[in-house]
Length: 270
Image (cartoon, rainbow, N blue to C red):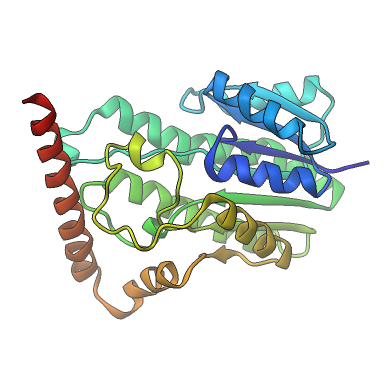
């Protein structure tokens, strides 16, 4: 019987590419996303390429009952989840004092609470079967403090640390746990957080390359995987410089992006 993978944020970007890769490798899929139309389009497109079972579940991961609703759906379908990819995420760009709290709260729920509880609910089954894969999508942002994206960076740092601790706990169980930490990637993420035209553009990866890198690293048993030379350098930077210096560097870049965004808004209003 084919293994079954559950992927959040599956309607596009890295999530969709990861589903596509898994489908070609024979995995049955549970695709989860809050974008109903996008999810329908993605599953329809994927069903033309792969010959595996595809289930879709529309769910807003920022709600308190998101994880339990997803697991209830898999149980109703009689599915055992062999691989979890907590991929869904978004950012909130701007000064914390001025940011929208509802968006910050929703982001923390999506990045921290829902993926943690989803793992909590599905992990016992994996342990009892003696096999399983858990993959969390953090970011190179997890390695550094991020002025103007403070809650985003902090939430990704949580995923990084949680994953490393869980991987240690799962030694000898047959379960592999990994966090992927990509840098800027060609998805809708930047547009969604209000920074669709960043200053630094040379280090933008394609989502299919990130998905392939993540899968191969997960199969090899890596715990922390950072795709791309410049991303690796960014992740290593905090080991060489003080956190104060790194925060200043990141803050300067973000303030330039913030100024650009503000100028663009002003131009659109003329």
